[in-house]
Image (cartoon, rainbow, N blue to C red; front, side, top):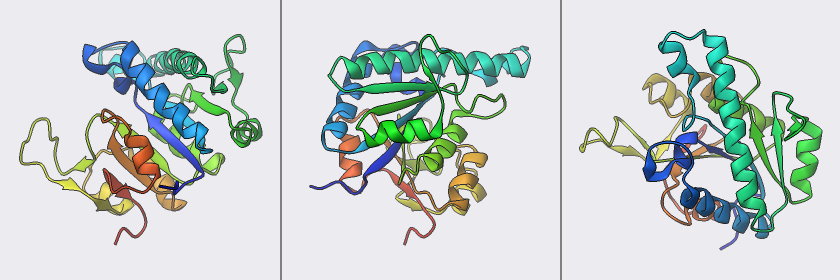
Length: 240
């Protein structure tokens, strides 16, 4: 099958990297994901990735525990950089050129985020990983994903999660939960479905940027989604 998209942005949660161990980075999960990214790159698809840090530290959790919110969020940004370094290493071990760009300047280990440079890397077939979110406290990596996707003119956000789409309630707690195949941005906001935070959804809505939410744990799903298989949940302006 041919690919439906030429340039994609994958939003990968930090929790997705922890696998079944419940914390940190699972080497097996990391290598599996890297292998799927390498396959996309060899198909000629331009791949950007925004990665979270919840497997190491969550700013909101730190704030809830009494930390200053700004300090906690900066710690969360640094956690995403750690994940980005691990992912870059795993992808490059498969022979795929990769660049890590961060919204906080850490020049010893990553390039500073520069939109034109990121776009040029994608055009040259390099996988670009964006770390440190937007570089601002109070903004999530979901918002960073929406922002970077629009800046580099990605055609779709692929939100890789631990469930196979968007449900009307948590399927891990409610066996009767119903999965949505199609949603509008307003559906997500009005139903408070918590797919991505409201700022990210609003940015995508204003720019008609589709989002596909799918299960990362099923091997080959990223490729299947890009080839147009009806997996997960599509969020777009007119899902009919």
